[in-house]
Image (cartoon, rainbow, N blue to C red; front, side, top):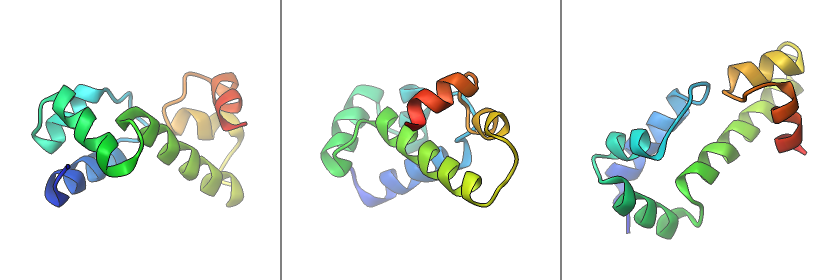
Length: 93
């Protein structure tokens, strides 16, 4: 299973880069583990693939931003790394 320090490094990296395009290789590098091994360990620890975890965090952050009225939907989508407002609304549903 993914140890606490590696998970903390990966989670901090994801949280700090939610608005940027993230790849499995980027997150695995932050955890200092090969990407395939990282993906397996991450899923065993969280029950999510790394990219599903990223999407879940983006949607949670979007929910918070929209609840606080921090700009329009298009601004929220852009701030969280979605391709466009349409992509964001389809995913958010």
